[in-house]
Image (cartoon, rainbow, N blue to C red; front, side, top):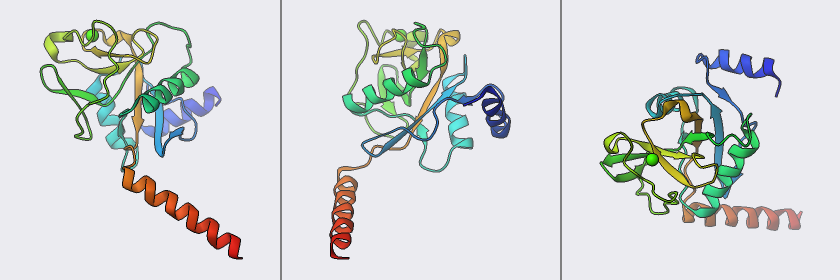
Length: 182
Ligand SMILES: [Ca+2]
């Protein structure tokens, strides 16, 4: 993407300073991810941006499995304009429903929790939110007191349910069967 394209995209979004840095929608197991560059953006502003500017079904990213979390991190690494910067920290959709109790914006409990060693450590008296990249790995941090360490945020669609995945495979098999008959 050219700089001109990025600037135009930012202007069209009506939110100067937020620039999408993925092209298309990188997808893992039917779950789409999009990465946005927005230095020092707060978690609340990131959530509001997603709600106002992305289509229905998009929210701050969830990563409910090791595979999804690793894919999300690899997507950030590929898209980030400053690869290798140790402060490459992006918001995910995890927040605290009460101090120390984390959950996803989708209402799902956070069961897979790849916290970095020593995290979560109760940033800002246990008011922080889940971020990825603080330690330049796929491991998580609860960030609340270092806004200048935030590079942006990740949005995703929900992870498809097992039923939806099975139904989808059934449709693919049926389409293949129909094609083979024609
Ligand atoms: Ca922390």
